Image (cartoon, rainbow, N blue to C red; front, side):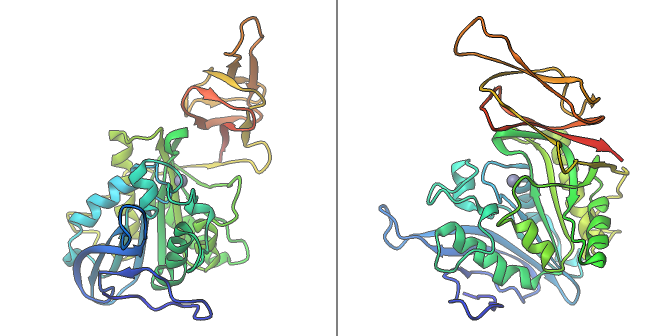
Length: 345
Ligand SMILES: [Zn+2]
């Protein structure tokens, strides 16, 4: 067993160990092993699949998916990449973790069935915290310090659907990092590129990585608890485009592709980008995902489904632009985001 070195030794060592040597060239598949004593296995473990692909000197890129367990575009691309990426085609190192929150991924749920932890609200984590916090801590103190750049692939999970976008996270106090992250998000070459405004940034991997001074790219590409052929192609190509952009993958190798798309820049307004439902009910979409919207235009109508004879409630666009995200499936509750709007830059 090999463990990476922790960067903050004021905290106890992580209970997680790696079965893969991070410093060995070649393609290695193994696991991050988190002890998990439970009713059906007193000496059990959470086994988080991991690949380390190394070839000599160069940058280290950390690629993650499954931060939320009900998202499949990232794990799909990263499992394939972990199985096919040829060390001869790279310079440096690629660390791939397709299913960060493995218990959640195995259950097909956003949060962990062990402790209900939302991994992307648990950073920087704690080595002696809940299982989800222990996973977060390992990424924060062991994997992140090894990385020169990070990409974390998300989609909308089972309850949201996004237009395909790559995003940087704004770091205004570090202009060089900010510029590098924006250039990388463009290099992903998804149909749209943005600086995503998060509803709730506390405890996020995004914030931690961007704040550490490393270029960070995240995505929101589709969702609804499945993959789609056209979206898988975008993510497959985007992951490889980033490896080329960051100087790790040989652009002339068979694995690399030539980006054939210039991303449309979009902005999610700080205030009013999200449309929040004020009612429970059944959504009638008046604009398709990715459709053009103009301020004042009704985009969704929510029908009261528990009793008849009640007038529906219309929700209106507040900006001119595009319907960038919508709630999924058909029922919505009061207080939940029904849609996200974006303006075209
Ligand atoms: Zn997510």
